[in-house]
Structures are given as structure tokens and as C-alpha cells.
Image (cartoon, rainbow, N blue to C red; front, side):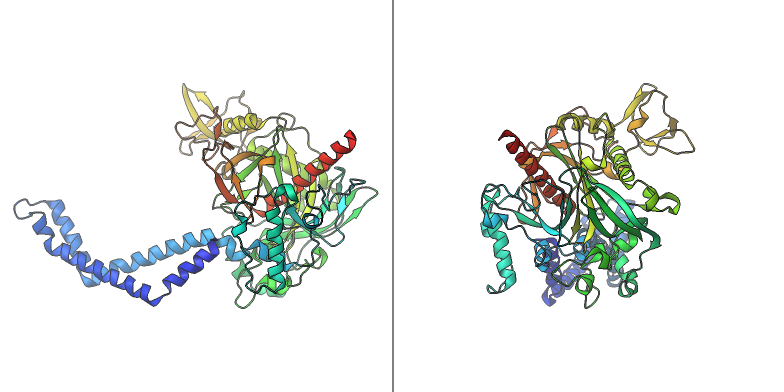
Amino acid sequence: MNKKKFRKRIDKFLSKRIVQILFFLMLIVFALIIRYIDKNFLIWTNYEKYPNKFVLLLSYIISYLADAVSVSTALGPLLVILKAIWLKFMKSILEEETKTEANHHKIIRSYAKMNMDKTGIDSIGEDTHPVINITTFSNYLSKSGGDLMQIHNICNTNCTRIKPESKNQYSSNYEKERLALELLKKGKDHGGFINIANVNVYTNLELNTKLEVVKDSNELFKLDIFIEMNRMKLLGAHSEKNNNQTIRLNDLSYDENTHTLKLDTQRTTYFDMLITNRAMDYNLGETTLRSMFEFTPKLTPLKKSKFANHIGITGVIISKDGYVLIEKRDRSKSTWRDKFGPTISFSLKSSALAPNDGNLLNVDINQKIIKCIKNSLKENYSFIEKEDYEPLTFSKCFMGLARDLLEGGKPNMYFCVRLNKTAEEVTLNMQKYASLGEVIKGTYKIFNIKHDRNRNHELRYNYHYPYATLSKNFDLKRSPLKTEKLSSKYYFIPFNDIAIDYYYQLNLPRGTIEVKRKFSPRFKKGNNPQKLYRTKKNICKECGEGLLACFSYLEIFQSLEERKARENHE
């Protein structure tokens, strides 16, 4: 049962008259019990023989609560506080589902005219994929504006129990659901796959693609008047309140001769993205943004879209021995709450690409994006170029560009960073870097690094010790680490062992390498940064759309490498 259905059941249960009457009776019984205790409290404590100030004080408190008016006065605010706490807790859990449709399959079915991979039906067991050109292995650009992406590393255990949600067996939706289940039941070894709510626009199969901005504007994109009228209501649905100016993708084209993706960009804001792409299914009375602007069975082209559509950067980190590093995101995140997510995720800010309100036509956007990825690897995981991974180039680590159906077609670029160390070596290093410390006056201290351009590097012990200057021989190149990333859980899992079920859940098998960074650098007592930890039980969580898209691209490139190896062997 998903969270949305659970919330509906709870609301339905609490709205019943009999439940409200029983709750009222419970309050009356509670008041009677308090009055009975007040009447007999001094007798039970034998106060007359053994007077005690503490007992007398308790007697006064109970007498106050026993009064009918006092009981109502005490319980009233308490119930209001408990209700507020409950509503805040439920909002934090269900915030994402109130903004975007929780049933991803429903969103996928609504875009009926987007190209779909029929490989699993027509050629069972054959190693084929529509994105890959078997003869030339050339870069792929969708002619229809995007093709539904799939994942072939699936888990079909217990899928026979899943039934189509549509009750009408003669409807088109029922047939689509039945077909999707049939594809899942075939399994990985027999051509089965599962569609995800992303459409592939471009795939960098030749690993030679570069970007070029051919048109750019410093002006902010103007939202539709309907969206502006509902701005405050849509913004109130989000807990994140930090705004930035970002890069919007207006349109793109591809030059086959130079292998260049040509971009048309302008400026937008993070808030505008929140109230459009991230609030597609938020209830605005009688309608939603999806029903207003994305009601057709085909995704609106970028140049005609009414949404902010800023460019997102998403990527995965893979170890030398084929392990994928994934993040278990906590409930404080704005997206993919309590789900598995990608380890590289940020938006393209105009301050990083074009500082001082500059124009993107005058900058090398390829180098700028790579620099942002390097900074993310350093600040979040202490990965250093040449030491932990080979020098990055845009063409070699760029996998492709896709649009997220859940977020109204928001464009995202996907990358893959391959480390030059094994998963075990990387895990030990990540734990070591997360618990940085040095001996000061004979005592081992755990600290965070704080950097200020106008001052020297400084450290602070556990947030409450005074500042102290670092020694000159301390390795500053691996600091600082972002606290928000230290609060997340991380796992290394073999890519070939990944299996996604019908509900887009990933079950981490026992023995998965767990990176112990949570709440670092204040390591819990008994946690040794030099020790390797493996999970002792199965962990099952839903995957965010960004991670699913990364898995889909990795499957394409893995299939491509296998085919090239077979052709060379023949």
C-alpha cells in the first residue's frame, strides 16, 4: 500500500462519526479517572501520618487537572499541539506525493503516443535495443521528441499477484497495464523490461558529443498568467525555500557533422521550477498544472512548454570493479524523499556558468559543467581528480539527455564517473574522509572544516568547541565536506545484481557494502572508519526517477560494449 492510499484510509477512518464519538467518550473517561485519583490520592499516600511536600504538590496538580474546566483547558491546547505535530509529520512524509502523481504507471500510460520499446514482445530473448544503431553505433537523437526509457534488469518475483488497476477489461488502459505486466513476467533473461517515467531525447553512444550554446538570453522566462495567479499556493506546497537563478533549456538541435548538441537557453529561477515542474499534480481546486498544460498523449516540445524547465545534472559513480554507489536519501530532502537516489544531482546555476550576468555564448559550457561535477565530487565525497578518478572530459562521461514525465518534461543531463579504485577501497576512503581528525595536545578530536576566502582554513570541534587554526601539513585538498551529504546513507551494489520490480523498488541483497558516513564527522562510538561494513539484512526502497534513468543509460552502454566485443571477436 502506498502512502497516498494509507493517508486516504486514515482520513476516512477519522471522519467516521462513530470514531469521533468514541474519542469523545475516551476524554470523558479520562476526566473521570483524574477526578477519582484526586479524591483518593491523599488516602493512598497516607499523607495524614506521613506528611510530605512533594506529595502535597502532586495533590495540588491532580486537583487542578480534576476540575472540569481545568481538564478542558489542559486538554484543548494539548490536542491542538498534537494535531499540529501530526499534520507536520504527515506533510513531511506525503509532501512529494501531493505535488506529483505517486502512481508512475498512470503517468506513463497517459503519454500513449510516445515511442515505446517493443523489443520484449517481438524478439524474446534477443539482445536488441531501439536506441542503438547496430550497424554504425552512432549517436541517437529521438525524432519524436523523446522515447520512453526502459530498465531490463528487473525483478519479476511475485508479479503474478499484481493485477491491472483498471476495472474495465475492455478499456485501452486495461490493455496497456496487462501488456506492461506481461513484459515484466517474462523476466530479464527472456526480453522482459519495465518502462520508466523518462523519455530519452539524446544518447551519446559514440562518446564524442559536445555542447554549444547558439542562442542565449539573460532575461527571466515569464510564466503563464494562470501559474502566476497561483504562485503562492504552489510555492506553499514546498518546504524548500532557497532560491537561485538557473539555466532554462528552450530548445535543442543536433549537428551530425560536428557531433554537437546546440542549445537555446535563457534564465529562470529555482522557485519557478518548484511551482511548475515540481508541482504538476498539486490540487488547485478543480484542476492541476498537468491537466491544464500536459493533457495530450504526447509530451509538449521544449520550445512550446509553459514550465521553467531548468537543466538538471544527474549522474552515478561506478567503482573499478563495477559497483554502483547509490544514496539513501532522508526525509528532509526536497526530492526523492526516503528513496534511493543518484550520487550526483544538482541544477545548473547561472552564477556557475555565467557569473556577473554574463552571456553563455562567450563561455565553454562543456568545461563549466565538468567543473561543477568535479566540485560536487570533492565537496560531497572528497573525490579528487587524478587520484580517485581519471581526468574528466565532457564527451567521455556524458551519457545522454532525457526529460522527466513526472515533472512535466523537465530536461536532465546524465553523466557517469568511473573511479580508478575498487568499491572496498573507495568505501574505506569515504569513511576516512568523513571522520577527518588529527592529534591536538594529545587528544584525538573530530571536526568539520570551515573555509572562508578572507581567512585561513579553520576547524571547529563538534560545533561547540572554540576555533583553532589547522597545521600547515594538513591535507586541505579533501575538505570541506557538505553536512547534508554526511547525513545520508550510501551503498555500493554490483550493477549486474540490480533488479527493479513493478513498483520501482530496489532490493539491496545481503552483503551489500554500506558506507558508514551518517552523522559524521561525529562518528558513533564503536564505528571504525577503517572497517568494512556489509548489510546483514535485505533493504528495499523505491528508486527516484533520476536513479532509474541512470540505470537505463548504463544498460544501454553495457549492451553496446557487449555487442562491440562480440563483433570484434567474430
